[in-house]
Image (cartoon, chains in turn orange, red):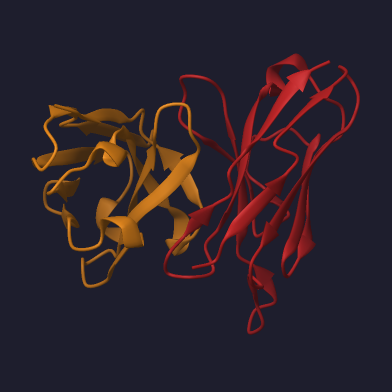
Length: 118
Length: 113
């Protein structure tokens, strides 16, 4: 059974940093692109970033470029999102998701809440 | 960026009736080399992560009831629920994966009339 479990969310002050993790199981992690998608409270879905199987390609939504870094450790079956210079507008539930063949997300985690507030 | 829009923002349909949601992309998401539309549909219920319904604009994900269908090509797409059931109350999103920067539509909320 495919499982994606996010962790690392919490309350952080504006300008602060946070690192999210996603533990994957039930599939060959190193064979898949991986994604982060976020959802602000009461709002719609926003794709944040994708990373290729070997980490050689990474793509970001413009609003997080230069502040967020997606990475992965295939030996640990883990996906990460390093978030720096956090802003109030980054407040959201962050989902880890698996894009099938670099396309649609066929599996999603339950999400982890990040709150940026003083 | 490819901008996705959806209409309507919300709709209320009687049980057993048809629900139709429209999605439009700011540029074509049809890849000419394989003649595939790089568009997916998701369903999200309160407090849950999204669930994949449709990919390649019209291919139903395994296990998704056949009352859900997707159609369209290029820039204009439709998700149809042929006979609305109570468990279909949710927000529905389209998403393009044509460009390296994926984008979602703003969502359409479906309720029971």
